[in-house]
Image 1 (cartoon, rainbow, N blue to C red):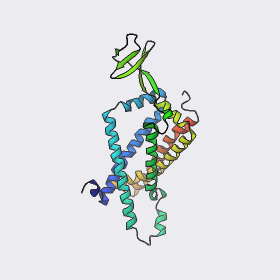
Image 2: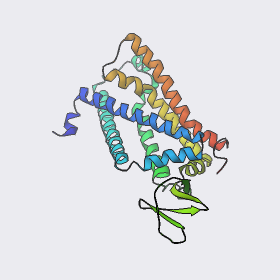
Image 3: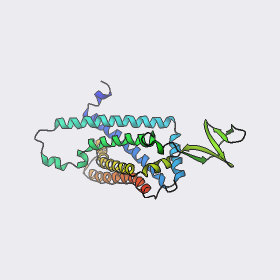
Image 4: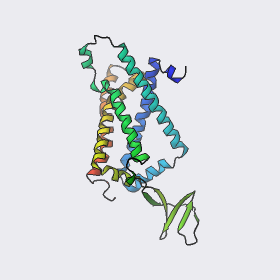
Length: 259
């Protein structure tokens, strides 16, 4: 039948959606922790970004896992949504509808908005086509390494296929200035406002998603469910707040004043 056929199983679909949800939430947390390093300073943030870019095949494996997770998450969520609509009786009671949280009723719509945001985010900061003028800036850092002087004047340094320069007595290696890119990007009010709205929607989505995916994998109980509801609310709020703090502090010139 293929994978799409197996996903028609309601139980399997819920399980796949929960597992892919966990993978995506872990990525969101890891991405947030990495991005918050912008508050430490330019060198630390660019070192973090350069480390990610230097992962090579490992980075592509991570990207492939994330892409597959997103695709499966979308397929299963849409399938379960339509299954739920088709199973709903005509005389659906308004009282039960009210009891359902707004976050749970709007999951598919907030999910679609998050997908649109992610596409824009990739075009903006990863591919650099949404705002080309902030993309492609270079940063130079000092590093101890064996190198070959390709020019007798000592102006060009060759190291593992990458070219850098000598400035005075220092050997400087080139890397992407992600710090400058992010600061320049968020200095534009409309861009920052768009990102803030996107992160509010993300927090809204996660509020129900975290609780739901934990219950789906079989961890439940009256007290545990109550605890997970509170934890889901707190964690989703902190994630949204963490992401929002970056454009807000950049617009206030608390971060990025050296750019």
